[in-house]
Structure formats: C-alpha cells, structure tokens
Image 1 (cartoon, rainbow, N blue to C red):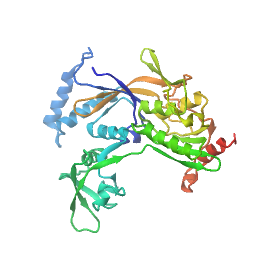
Image 2 (cartoon, one colour):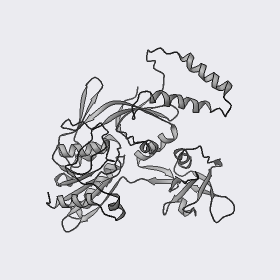
Image 3 (tube, rainbow, N blue to C red):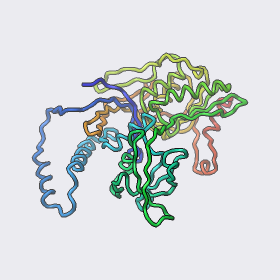
Amino acid sequence: MRSLRVLAITLLAALLLAGAFLAGYALRDQRGHNPAGQSADFGLYWQVHDLLASEFIGEIPSARTQLYAAIHGLVSSYNDPYTVFVEPAPRELERDDLAGHFGGIGAYMSRNEAGDVILTVMRDRPAARAGVQDGDVLLAVDDQPITAGMSLEQVIALVRGEEGTKVKLTLRRADKAEPFDVVLVRERITIPSVEWRVLDQANHVGYIRIGLFGELTINELKTAVNELAGQGTDKLVLDLRGNNGGLLDAAVDTTSQFLRQGVVLREVKRGGAERFYSVKPFTSAAQDWPIALLVDGGTASASEIVAGALRDHGRAVLIGEKTYGKGSVQMVHELPDGSSLHVTAARWLTPNRHQLDKVGLEPDVPVSISAEDRDAGRDPQLARATAWLLGAH
C-alpha cells in the first residue's frame, strides 16, 4: 500500500454546478479488490442486466458505460455529496487544475444553446497564432467527431495532451462554407492561482486574491508578498471570495505566510482520533501586516481553513458573507483506468475547534454585495475591508 498524502481538492466543474465542494483528500492507488465481508445477492444484478440486454428496444450502452453507471449508483447510495466516483476525463482535468498547468492549445471551451462546442482563444497561445478565432465551432479532434453526448470535460481531455505534441482540430466558422482543419502544437498553459496589486499607495494597502489552492500557489504567494512589500505595503486585503478549495498542503503553507507559530487546523477521523497541522517555519513580511480577509458563500474547504486559522489566531478580521461550510476530508483512491473514488473519511475543525462542516464561518463584519453593485462595478465588501484597515472599525 502506498503512503497517503492528505490533500484538499477543488471539485470538478460539473460537481460545482451541483453545489458540492471538496476539501481534504488523502491520495492512494487502488490496484486490487478487498472484500468487505458483506454478502449480497449479485445474482439479482445479473438477472436485471441480462433482461435489459435481451429485451431493451433501444441502443444498448457499452459495457464501460454500464459499469460506471453501476458504480455511480453504489456510491450515491451512501448519501454523501462528497463521496463521489470521478470518471477518467474529469479526473484528468482536476489533476491539471491542481498542478496549475497542462499541455494545451490556449482556448476556452463552452457550449451554446444548440450544444455546439465554442472556442474562445487566449492571446499569444497556439490557437491564436494558428488563426483560430473566437466563436469557431469545434467539430472534431484528431478526426474524432465531437458528439452531443460528450461532456465538455471529455472534449477538453481530447484537446489537452503532452506538451510538444500535435493535435488536429476540425472547425466550422460562420463566414466559411466548409469546415477546415488546423494543426496545433500543444504548449504549457499555466493557470495562475494568485493575483495581486497595490490597492492604496498612499496608505500602503496591498491586495492579494487567491482563487485556488494548487501546487503553484505558495510560490505565487511568496512573489506577491515580496513585490507588495517592495512597494511599501504594510496592510493587506486578502480575498478568498469564490475560492472553493484546493490542496491542503497549499492551505497550510498559505496560512504559514501570515502566522509565525500555532495550529492551522485539527482533523478528526472516524472513531474520534485527532491530529493537528502546525504552522510551518516560514519567514514573511506579511506576518506583521494587519489583514482584512474577504469571504462569501463561495469560500469553502481549504479557504475556510485559512480564514478560520487566521481569525482564531487574531491575525485577520473576516469581512463579507457567511462561508460555505465544507469541512470534511476525502480519501482519494486512484483507480487503474484513470478514474478515482473519493470517500469522506474525516472532518476539519479550526484551531479553536470551530466546526466548519455544514456550519461555515460567520463574518466579523457582515457586508453584502448586490446584483446592482456588480452591474455598476461597485465592490462594497472590498471598500469596507480597506476602510477597516485604515481604522474605520
């Protein structure tokens, strides 16, 4: 059995749409069958299987499709939104997101109302340089047709691949009578997880937003802190709004950029066994900065760990709206075909033992943001955070 790595992982896009957020993962390979000692009448399953195969009038799904459907059904019977079976294509995209980079063409994909896959290109990336345009419709990848039955994750997985390899896209464009092919060479596409800027130069207020806790987050965060410190920052707005998780190690590292010592979080396993994660011995200018930390209903999982730890240690005030409340830990079993099984196996508490799961964190300074605010480009939560740092408590 391989050693376990405890992770906190964002949900796949499809699961996010269902309102589920992932938190901690312990990662292991699952190579063999381990009987649970339970008896079941699997003859009933095969009886149903054979009746469908012999009598169903429509198209019979493939054996792999039937297998995955059976696994999804088994997993869903446990009635836990975070215990999930993830098929190979979306699991591959999940790994890419956490790694912070992948081999790709530099284009976003979406579906229109007709079900077509529409491309939107990134500047100075392979797709743009080859002449692919916003609005082009993707018809095939390496001569494999894109069908209405394919999920967007499956299509993206076809386009992505090893850096330096070629991929052929068949496209349709509104002003062209016939479809055409474009051959691209995949490049390394980086997904930044941290953005930063000086918010108020005169009052030395900096701003850092973390969108995801991935493998590259800590290095990006160190760069952000160093650059802001070099520009005179001594107060910080830390924005975790909409951050629905990431790697647990990245969350602990992030917290350690703002704390010198102490506990980051506590983990309680089945049976009541408890372990804790301590602050890592980093040196950072931000350990002396007052912090106004922005949260909302999209702040979940690993980002709740950071917010809870900084508040419990008196390092930050939480401003905004109540967080999501995702504090359970999933064991991730990597399966031989590239799929994975995520099993809820523990729960997280803040350093002061505040339960996160199904509870969330209430802001110290509640501030809502309306649709009218967004339409007008206003951000009252950010404005309140800045005012708090300048003494308007």
